[in-house]
Each structure stands twice: as C-alpha cells, then as structure tokens.
Amino acid sequence: MTDWTALIRDVPDYPKPGILFKDITPLLADHAAFTQVVDELGDGLAFDKVVGIEARGFILAAPVAYRSGAGFVPVRKKGKLPAGTYEASYDLEYGSATIEVHADAFDPGDRVLIVDDVLATGGTARAAVELVRRTGAEVVAVSFLMELSFLSGRERLPGLDVRALLTV
Image (cartoon, rainbow, N blue to C red; front, side):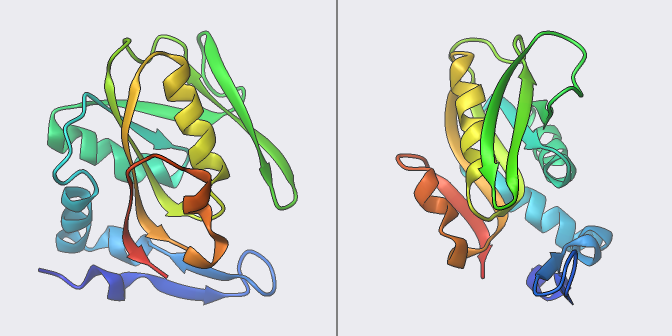
C-alpha cells in the first residue's frame, strides 16, 4: 500500500493570502497512489451511477465509475450542460453558485455515489444530493478524498453515509 497522503502538497497563500491550499496533483501523477484512492472511494458500496462534481471531482469520479462498472454523471456549473437540466444553488463564503445536472441523467431508483475531492463547508455536496434526489434516484453515499473538518461540512449532509479518505 502506498502512503498517498504524503503526496498531497500544502501550498500556502493560494489562491489568496491566508489560505493553505491542498494540492492533489502529485497524488494524481503517482499511478499506485491514484489507483489506491480510486479503489477506496467506492469500496464496499453498491451503485449504478457515480456523480462527479466539477471540476476536480470529475478526475476522481470517472475512474471510480469505470472501475465499478457504473455510469458517470457530471454535475456542472450553471450553463455548461447542453440539454434540459435541474439546478440547485448554494452559498459560498463570498456569494452563491449554481450547479446543474441533466434532467435525464438518472432513472428513478438508481443508486448513486457522489464523489468530490474535498468536503469543505458542504454546500456543493448538499446541492448535488438535492439534484440527485430530485430525479428520483437514491444517494447511497457521498465520498471525498479529503475532509476539512474545521469547516464542519459534514453537518450539512445529515442522514447520509459521508466518507472521507483523509480528514484534516
């Protein structure tokens, strides 16, 4: 087993002063570490589709879907999907944002795993859960590479199986 956690690089003052950014690109570049993370994100779960949240969630969710024999569904920023969509808005520390999913991305009863890189305040993940549920599909778990526990994002996802491979 690779100690993939050692491959997450701290970048101080990025993207602005006072922020300690967790850079996952060294982890992604290491085949053994990346493979281990992909395997662990969906480990022990049964699902039909994997949602990846734009943008780094795509990098993790697509191989989880492939590896598990499931479909991949992108959840994107508003205005990026070409067909009919559902949308959900959420608050950020500096404003608000809206994400969308295609209205026909799921069948009622589909079991869905939501994957993203970081659980911070939980707003984006909560909006993704809302989108999946609006289609009649079921969220089986929300799985993150890393959780920033000091931001308490898990509290915005009550009643869900929330998984993080690394908690900081």
